[in-house]
Amino acid sequence: MEQTPDKIRASVRERFSKIARSPETETGFAVGPKSAKALGYPAQEIDALPLAVTESFAGVGNPFSLGEIKPGQTVLDLGCGAGLDCLLAARRVGPSGRAIGVDMTPEMIHKATQNALALGLANAEFRQGDIESLPVESGTVDVAISNGVFNLCPDKPRVLAEVHRVLRPGGRLLMADIILEDHVSREKVRLLGSWSS
Image (cartoon, rainbow, N blue to C red; front, side):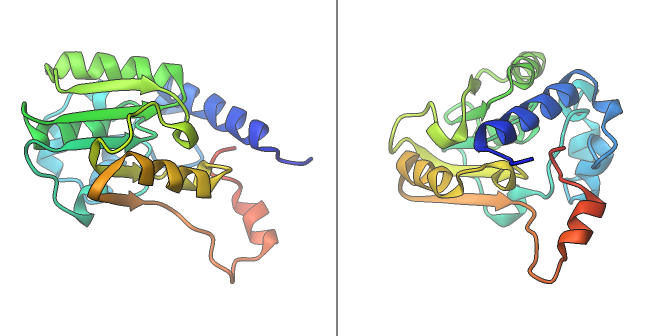
């Protein structure tokens, strides 16, 4: 069965909608606070958050370990999910900065918005949309972060073009992701399965 871009997006949307509603049912990859701590997020920072903020975390790394986020900056979280990275960014940029999360999954956007309200973070906002066509003005972002999302995008060059469009001159992309190495056979891929299916 051919995997068209629309079928890939539908599969990803379906899986992550389920992770937003019932994270405990995910068996294909690690989710939640235990996974975040295993990926290098400070345990005390994760443990201090309500479970609703961390339970649907589905990242593959810690983009904050790749570069500094400063007070007053604007941070864009690509594929923000339930908002953990975006909310941590909102805390780092403080009230003079802002954090914008974009996700294609309505359930994740709803959950992220509720999480921001629960934490009292007025400088975090969430927008539904595809990262291949970001609902963000050009040249307005200091730092874009992405955590395990780029590999799920059918049009990777378009995603990078959009990131370039929204970044200010000198802006940075901090990206944690997974890749398939050349020596991995097709049989091994079939055995392990797709991250989004």
